[in-house]
Length: 105
Image (cartoon, rainbow, N blue to C red; front, side):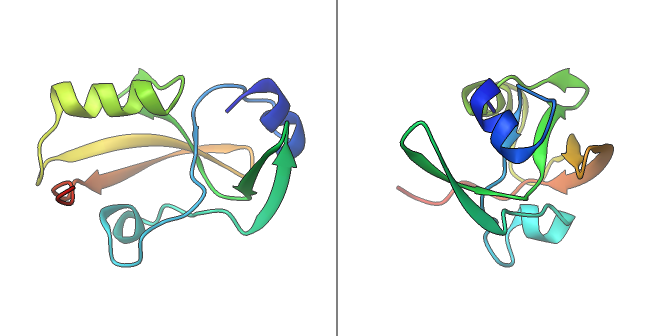
């Protein structure tokens, strides 16, 4: 999330990870995380908005996608359950997500 993206989504949160899409049957989908439902162009980039915003992982503030990836790489393994704080429709809630293995690249 950025200030400009926050304004476009009508949110007052300028940090976190905007969930634009969720893989059907994946860990996020199974946990109930919601992806975006409409598109918007912000500063020349297209985003799917209307989905959840991940703001914490296991109680640690997530400022952007790099911070989330770094935390998971350092502190989590496939099969482990993590607690994600998500902002959905301006309400904060916590979801338990059991992590899948990363797909082969």
